[in-house]
Image (cartoon, rainbow, N blue to C red; front, side, top):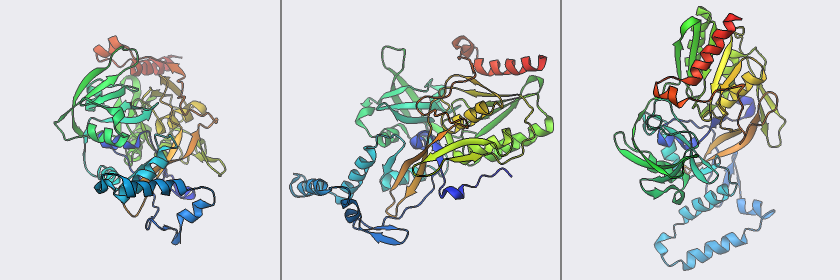
Length: 412
């Protein structure tokens, strides 16, 4: 009833704010296949083409081959001239020229690491990373993770990893250095806005098992639902929570998207199908050369009259921003907290026969009212800053503000 079928788009799309995040203790999944047959010919839909001849119509590649030949003939360490590595390096450079942290080519070794991370329990520190303004930056620590317990915050810049400069490493290598076996320790040097000097944080790596959805029944009939990620299992878990809500007729609902760095597009739309009327625009997708695709809800929600608060903060990104933006634009509820991260692009994954793959930005998305939040973020309807004094007493200032808001509505 609530499943979204993306076949008309031809691909599965996901919204991982930092698709490398799995490498430090979180899961992401990729779909899509493109077959590469050999260096001299590329097989596309069963037809072999010569990429050099094809590109030669628009691009002069003679310089590339001149440099290739110079290296092959004259570089002083002949054993380092590995043509396969040169090809992968050239492709990585081409992809990197787009200056898009979400568009990355991964050689077979890196792709295998990505694939292996999808199976079984992950071990690491439990934080999502992205490259921002040329620096390795934390999007959000996962709830209950070693990173959160160590005090890491969204927008913290990772300056050093075990004493080595993060800037000397590729994003992949930096994340691989942070990731490690349960029980081992990694020391990360952090640059934080508002502090004059970098500081070290030592984190003991652990197994990362994060519940996708957690539910808590609060006082006065309010139901608190925390969505920690938009993964394969999120919809089933949220659906179970929804069924319980329908039976118990809550007086108010709080959906917590704080520190949720995103996930799958179809999961976000399906979650909105529980919260918005059927056939309501959830998000608008803009792909190059294609008309705008307005994705709509397809459910029959039975709780449309229940007051709703959506909690967000600077760690809420992509799919979280889709849900919050739709709730805000459609005036279904109140968005509360602090400004969100600001990721308004869509990625797809294509894997190649040699084991390599590319994660590529193929579209941007806008809210139902055509707002572009990329690099801007979503402003909440009600701003509630976290309170350090409350935090020391283990009081969640923003959650308490949401409860008070809903209780005050009941009194009106």
